[in-house]
Each structure stands twice: as structure tokens, then as C-alpha cells.
Image 1: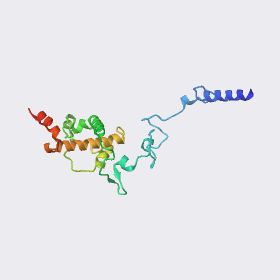
Image 2 (image 1 turned 120 degrees about the horizontal axis):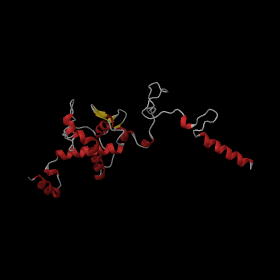
Image 3 (image 1 turned 120 degrees about the vertical axis):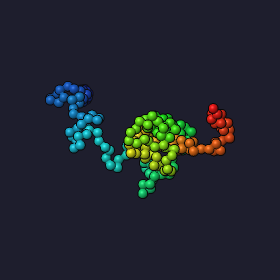
Image 4 (image 1 turned 180 degrees about the vertical axis):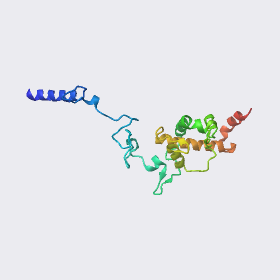
Length: 199
């Protein structure tokens, strides 16, 4: 009986210690100082509450994925990888198209040709046409999408690595579609294209 009473007392004490009850000068967890996201914090020398991950650490969502997949670079020299690590399927390209239309088409145009209202309104420099770029490896496009380039912001925080690689696949599809000749189209699809091109 005595043991049970001690257990109940200890449990109640632990539960109350997390409440905002002022017990012996301790106001509980509700009143403790804490760092809130995007707020200042005098605890750190740069006065920022949000911290960068320690060097060499890997976020949980990136465990088990190699450098090639996460950075678009490979080898000791850190050169860009040539190919896309995703298995290219229609679904992957369509997923890339969805992300492209949300994040990229506003500036680069729906066809990737740089023709967009936002692009026309940019005073400093218009976004380039993605279909007229010099040849680059897939890893280069992945890094630009991740980290940004020039005035373009990076989308590493908005798109997962899989989504960024899917956008790369879609950009490649856009490039091929804009450079394709009628002879490159499968014979069964040519009548449809010819019909659409007729006034």
C-alpha cells in the first residue's frame, strides 16, 4: 500500500511539474524561455534562433541517399553527373511538369522558351530560354534548381530531391520537343500534329 501511494505521489508530482503551477518559485514549462522560429535569440552570437545543421550531418529525410542523388555531383572532383538518377517514366516526367508549371513557368514560360509576362516585366535581366541553353549535364540543371543562379532563387526548400530530378527530366523533354522534327515523331502520331498545325 505504501509503495502504491509513493508511486501515485511521484506520478502526480511529475504531471504537475509540466503545468503552469507556481510551485516553490518554479513556474513550469509554460513560462520557460524558448527560441521561436524566425525570431531573435540573444543566446547565439548572430542573434538568430534558427540554426544551420552542424557540418557533416545528414537530415533524416536524406539518409540512405547518395551524394550523386542529393547534389547532382559525383566523384572526387565533384563534377556534375551526366544522367538523371530517376528511372524515366511518363509519370516522372508528368510530375516534373507539375512542379515546373508551379515554380518555373512563371518566369521561364510554359514552353521553357523564356516567354512569360513576369519575364517581360523583369528590369535587370530576363530569364533565359531553357530550350536554347548550351548543352549541360543533368547534374548542372539539378544544382541550378536547388541553389538558384544569378537572380533566380533556389528551390531546395520547396522541392524534394525527387521533384527536382523530375523537373530536370521535364526540362529535357521540353528541349527535345522544341527541337524535334516531324520525322522524329512516331508515324501514328503525325496525322494528329498535322491536323493541329492546320489553320
